[in-house]
Image (cartoon, rainbow, N blue to C red; front, side, top):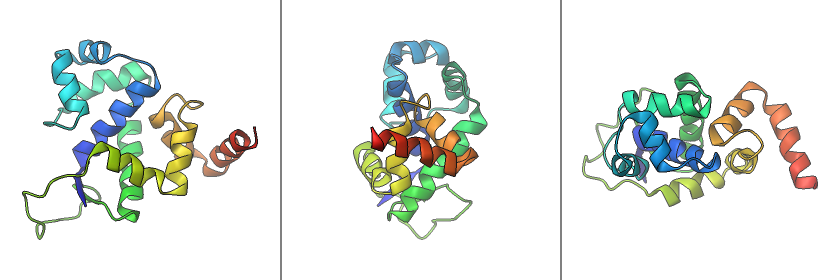
Amino acid sequence: MIVNYSRVVMFLVGTQRKNTGNSQHKMAEQAGVSQQSWARFERGEGGASLDYIAPAVAAFGFTMLQLITATDLLCALLEKNDVTVRGFGYKTYAHLPGDVEEVSFDVLREKIWDSPVGKNLFLGAPIFGGLVGACTAYLRDPEQFNSRIALLHAE
């Protein structure tokens, strides 16, 4: 299974939008594109440039560095679950055919969920301001993050 790094970025941005209750229309306005273009970005159809993503990420209250760091965490989880991420970790995948169909967002979600860390990231999204916030909290202090998630499980 293969996915491009940019698709993982847009999976994360789309998930963050849904976690925070924002509409595609609002994100499109922030990015300066049409709602239809934003919807295509979220589906992973065509690449969204950082010029479009940065204003939307700022509207979530995060920096681009936090988004990229969160994306790297998700990519590491995906690769541990047998999904090759093109463009992640400065690796070359020249040996792979260029016309390979990428995995769907549903498969991405499932493969991330299959990891104990990934499952906790999704479970923690509501209390950390979305998936980007959960990734940021986990990377800042994994023990404290896991303690908060354990409290959720205890309730």
